[in-house]
Length: 262
Image (cartoon, rainbow, N blue to C red; front, side):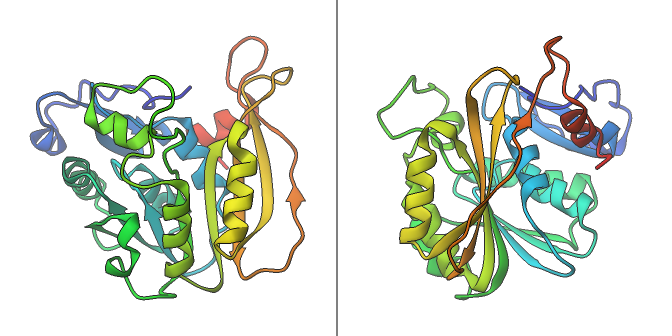
């Protein structure tokens, strides 16, 4: 898994380093064109966020909402890939939101990305109904009491449905999206049925699906799904996305994503 791009240590004399806090690393994406601060022991973004950002369909001047923005990595990637879109990131955890704000300033994207604190269980406080063209979401994958729960609060909330279940995220997306607006999510492949059925219940018709495999001979680990609010039925199943070659090097497609060459 990609955890944070290559290290950006050695930049200590730059103005950016002055806002790096104790216990944080300064990491990079796209060969240094994007930089971000992350907690060394708390939540750190993974390859999931990058795959989701590339998978989502964005057009022209779309208004985009990222639910559970964490360190702000998805808005940063989207702003880099799509120069005309405006992105809002919502985060429940105050410390994560503060770090995301520093990351936006670090990359001089204040005019493109706005951030606010919010809870997916109270979507009406996040914005106007139908105010967004696209909602992006990398929700917690694990049920509240399932699997090993990290002692770090940041990781607990990011990985487990402690402050919002899948239905809460989808309900918020349905409220925020305009008619025919698009929602894109990444989720565990083992819970793909839960995801697709919950999307339909929320009025978000699944339209595109792509399974993610670590290796070509392994079962899928993640699923990427895009839906349309009140869309017609009909699902396009795309070719599998393979992360690694047999040599454990990134596949050409994923390597190009990491380098920002797609």
